[in-house]
Image 1: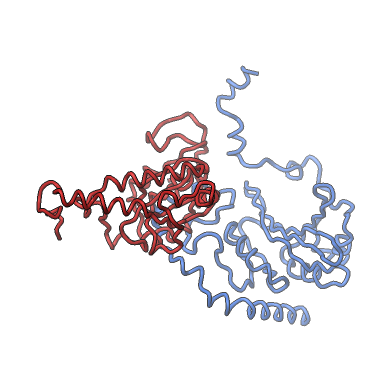
Image 2: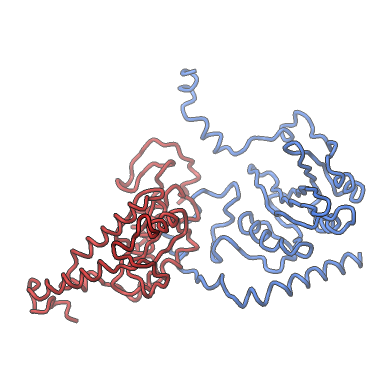
Length: 217
Length: 236
């Protein structure tokens, strides 16, 4: 379906017309990003502050919060997500139309944060694909704005020529975890104050004391 | 001091945590717990007179909070009397919760009562052996006990007999790892994270939020339960 023939001018490197079109399309997309706020905790307070007059997210093209996923471009997951909420998050992501991006705001959304417990999703990237992770607990509004500007930077680098690869989405993947079992295990290993590993470097013995019964397979 | 800490080998604070809570004064057997202390709340004395065999002991907690330990087999009868007796009138059930002390000890079901007319608080506790976690529901006495008992059932696995809708309320409907607030429950759950994620995404969120369910269920069930319990008392 045209995957083998990227660009308007046929196979090979993107032609002049494609690159100019890229510029216009990306310019339009990145300056009219409407966020879908998925606020579940204190990060949402900072998200609201970012949209309010002092920080005024609308300056950067997030003109309004889109409370319908069907009119939204970027999902901002702000706060901790329990397993009970995971299918809701996944359904909202599935309902958003392409092109769409996802921002994981704060420590809990990105990694589970301090909630390394039975009820909490250990990073929403096990459930939906994430473009930008914003650290902080919670991040300041400047942090969220910076994260959204990184989404804009990402859009700036996109090209219609590899559009199919960028937007590939399998309809059968709707409602399923984004990551496979092995990847989930890698991503969600215990870390934080009870740790013997951390998320960046994989298995690392930190010498921290843990209870053996907390680590049942 | 340094020699002492090096000889212990591991950080003893965590060992204590792993060992669970220590024996209470009563379990240690140093001194038998007093059968009763002078209660601050006259309802305790009245309870003892009305239900001589069913009130095991009472204590005073945090200075002025009266706690009564009663027979779990007669809990509904006792609580109904506390609500309906003209001298007691504990018409507000502030909370139903439970405590697991671990180590195979009894789980406590806690009823926190408040009497609006008398401005008096009373805490009623029942001890259930861990192998038989059943107690009668009080939804027929206070309709507000419905969700509180569901929460206790969900998190501790205590079955409330006669509850109109005893199912999980906080954890997902398809949660199969047990009851998370039990002391023997591992912090991160029993399944792997991959399995937990997969199971989480197989739930249907609409199972929990059906508007028709709320409209059709709540008023009728509460009325029926109240009427049925009332008849039972009259017959007995």
